Length: 336
Image (cartoon, rainbow, N blue to C red; front, top):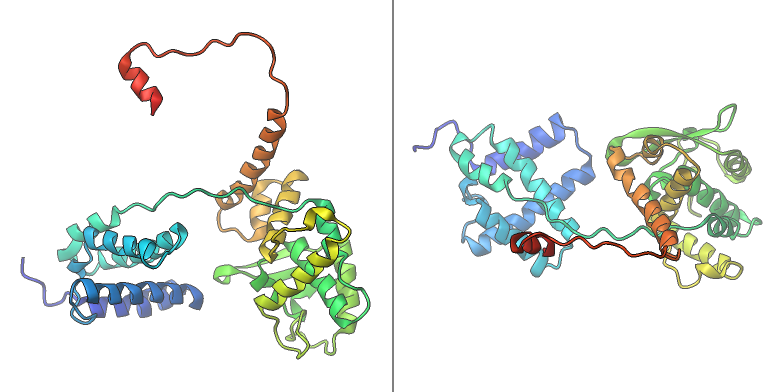
């Protein structure tokens, strides 16, 4: 079939995908666009080595299912990407291929077969989270006297109260916090999704004390700045949390030899809300999950704990009848 003169080349299609589709029509965040960009940089380098084609000469038809599977295998075997990373790269490729179906009908059969490549399944590790006693020990660990100690106390209390991502907490400005009648904080979340989270009375009181320590009350200033008055980094928060955990472990022995990150605090918030009877859809809104299905992993973790407790019980006495398949075929199926 002759190629239509109006059909864009692969290079032109890819540029339109990023500029028109991702940036203008979908308005994706710069972080998401950067992740998509990195996927295609890897793909184009791989194609140049394995197909002998430069990025400009590559055609959409070259991205068939066999080539893409070889590329995904390369990511796992040679670049040692995790299954999650492999699936994220595939998601970016799928997004482009779906866009391409509207602009290159000649390549539609090839694209359809490529889109049939499934995401790879992987084992999700059981969530590790902190008990209420462990959380209390960590929150009380920073020295209450001094600028740094008061900031760390307020910072850790905010992390636990909101269950926010560390990027969301360090981006909080003074104007984002309401401490009057109904205390709350306005978070600017992942994917530029904003949400408001209520503040507990204890958190609001810590924040009132902390605001009196700040050198400026200008609304655009960061609520939790570093010593230089600028935004803290992720590594700053991780380091301050590590110091608090180390201090708390002297009184709470269960914290010793544990690897605790800011994201562990987020997991603890979700689990404690769940155990307090808060509905899972509310927890999803609290954490800023786009879908309650993401929050369901906390329910599974809680059920796992209940199963462990159940397994400690002594089984009741009595003969249990074991199911026996009626024929060899059924026996084979049961053995799988």
